[in-house]
Length: 570
Ligand code: C2O
Image 1: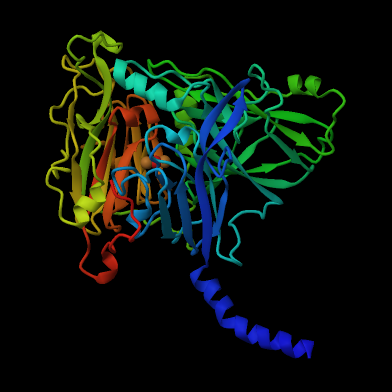
Image 2 (image 1 turned 60 degrees about the vertical axis):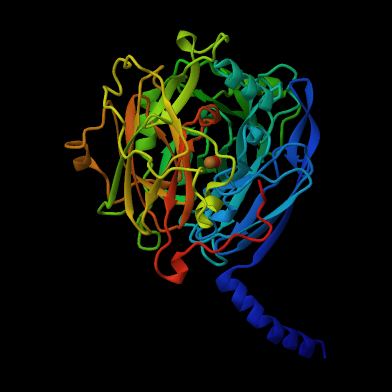
C-alpha cells in the first residue's frame, strides 16, 4: 500500500520536477525595510536594514530560477533595491536604480521585484540604490549552477560568502548631504567590515571579528563581494594562496595569487585550500584600501580570522600577532595592473566568451572629477573655492523627478531626459596631462540611444582633473568584455591592434586605471534604460553616471514588456 502511494505520488510529482529541472523554480523572499539598532566601535546607532539584519540576508538561487522579492518599506526614507550584476533580460522594471528604472518605494508601500536569472551562475549581490542607503542595505546573491551541473573546478567542501563594507559612526545620509552642500569631500568611513564586522584592529571591536573556522586539508569556496561605498580594496589571508576562479558571476581561467584587488561592485570567487599541517592555528584575513587620488580616505584595515579546528583558545592573541598578511602598499597601481591583467574569461566550449568581433556604435567617454561654481554668498570647501562635481564627457548627470524607463515606455520623455548624450568629449584636451584652464562641468539628464542588438564599444578615458583615481565602472543590464586597457591617453590608431577579442574578462564592473583607459564591448540585446556609473558612491552622487536607452527589437521577444501593476509612483 505504502509502495503504491509512493509510486503514485512520484507519478504525480514527476511533471512538476521535470519542469523545475528545466525552467527553474520561483523563489519568494520577503524583505522588510526596517530600522535596527546596531553597535560597532562602541557607537550604537539606528540603521536602515532588511529584516533587521546587517549585513542583509543572503539570497540563494539556481541558474534559471525566478526570484520574487517582496519589499515592504517600513522606514521614513524612500528606498529601492538593485540586483547588482543580474542581467535583467527584458525585466528592466526590476533593476532598481532610483529615478532610472523606477520611482522609489515610499514609506508604507510595497513592490515585488520579479525577475529570472538567465545564463548566469556565481556570486553577485543586492544593495539599495538610492542616495547612500547601500552603506547598510546590502547582502550576497548566490546563484548556484543548474541542478546536476558541476563547477569547472574542484568541488568545494564548503562555500562562504564574505562581503566587505564600510561602517560610518555618523549617518551616511547626513554625510553626503553635507558634502553636496559645502562642495567638499564627504567624511570618510570609520572602519571597513568583513561580513559587517570590523575586527580587532579598531578600538572597541575585538568581539566584532569575523571568524572562519576551517578543517585542515579541505577546499573552501570564498564568495568575495566588495559592497564598500567608496573604496577599492586589497584582500589577502596570511600564509595562504588563493585561486581565483570567477569574477562577476563568470568563470575565469584559474590563477593563484596571495593578494587580490576587488573594486566596489565587483564579486570574486576564490578557492582556499586549508593546509593539512596547520592544526590549532589562526591567520588574519585582511582588507584595506587601494587608492591613488587626492581625496582623503579611510586608511584603516579590517581583519577577520581564519581558524583551524579545533581552535586553540588558550592564547589566541599571540597567534594573531604571528600571522599577518602582507598586503600591497596603499597606492600600488602596478600590483593592481598586474593582477587585473591576469583576469581572463574561461572561454571554453561550455562557457564561451561571446565577444563582439565588430562594432556598430563607438563611444569615447572621459570619466572623472570636475567642479561646479559656488553659490553666491556661500563659501565652498572644494578646490579653488568651488564645489566638487564629476562628469562623463563633461555631462554631470542630473537626477530626474520621474523614472526614465517609465517616461520612455509611455512616450513621455519631454522635459524628463534628452537623447543627445555626446559620443565624444565636447572639447579634446590632454586628458592625462596638466588640467585644462576650465575645470567646470556641464549638467543634464541625457541618455545615449542604442538600436536593439547593436554591438557597442566604449572607451572609458580617465582624466587627471583634480588628481588621478581608479574609477570602478559598473554597467546595468549587461555584461561587458574588457577588450583593452592602458595608461595615458587612448590612441584610436594604435591601441585597438592589441585588443583581446578571444578571452577577455567578462563582467559588470571594472576599474578604469588612474590616468589610463579601458575599452569595453557589449551587445545591446536588452531593451530598456540602463545606468552606467562609477561605483564609488561619492562620485555617483557628484554625477559620474549616464544612461543607455536600448530600443525594442522587431520581434515580440525583443521588446520590453509593460511595467508590473505595483510599480511605485513618484
Ligand atoms: Cu551596484 Cu548602479 O549599482
